[in-house]
Image (cartoon, rainbow, N blue to C red; front, side, top):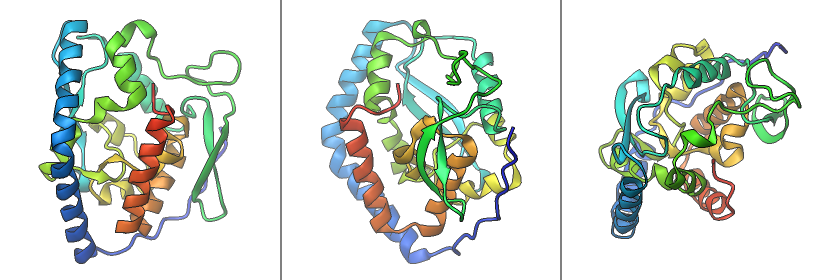
Length: 249
């Protein structure tokens, strides 16, 4: 595996004015969107209930700002009570750089910034023989409704309540579970310096299709350059990504 040399990123100090403005934007946008999103969430919940056995929501402890755990909400897209040991093994390997996401990795500039994505080289875990790498999730593990929710990112809608509770923001690094954070290298922890988000810079640049190191570079770039204008751009890019049908499956 190629050795990745990363200079320690520069992180801006806490900016109270921006944090207050961002929190206000999160709350206002969530409250404005709720009347539209609640009927959609009701339809999603009803479809999940009619389609398969199990709870409507998938609630999982994630690690948020400063390493504080919280319970994150998603619509359930997988069959109930699945053995997730293979998924845990994959994600640990992904964080450790032993796999390169879903077959592509990011290209970076001389400053280690995440720029774009390109076909990835083969990796030792999950390789299907042609140099592409896939997460260990089979079609049978995802419900019929779940495939639609994943394709449209509607499974993330319940996180609007995490935002209203102040545990998440609309924009920020995606939160990991504790056993993924345990695999972090020291510089990876800088992505925990801000509230996690429903969407982020890494998601609009590559989603799950980039290596973990490249994903973290995008997150650190966001931490360093965050502003209300950048937040609005990421929200707009997210809408474009979803409407183009390039959301995660």
